Image (cartoon, rainbow, N blue to C red; front, side):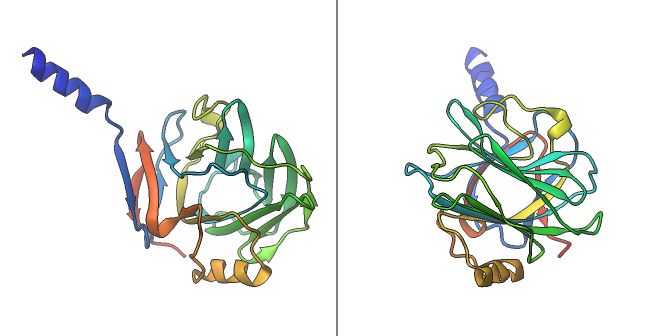
Length: 223
């Protein structure tokens, strides 16, 4: 009986799901507001980032602020964060510094987002549905740290922890790619059209991830 209880305990504490797989045509669905439900994206990154581009698709009917992509390193939160402040307003955070962008968008409606940052100039770019926002600058000369905790669905105030329900994401996220370079405008358009997938940090076609809590993988039903 003791051995049986031990195995039951081990089974209960195993994360809900873990895998590396091709998620083409799929999305992560975050069905409820919570301070626990999230997806952890796993990558081996041991070289500081001087350049970065992140592209993904999202669909939500939330009008309050929420996190879209949260990348923290040990002892540093908001190392790389893409956050929606409100309808028509997004922010990019690098090393705890923040720039905000105003965009024209329909609500509620699916959105394709590309966010990039270049250390040498400090220029951060945001593209929404293939359209560029006004470029902003921050953290010139900075390097984004290594060995990250990368979280979808929650905004980290710790290292993979300290989530706030009021900043949680409710909706669907998919088609996520991340590069250690700044994409050209032409490459951003290819990403928007779904034809650029040769990313080297995170790749939706070969994603290493862990589901925590109530997050479901479903077929993509919107464009």
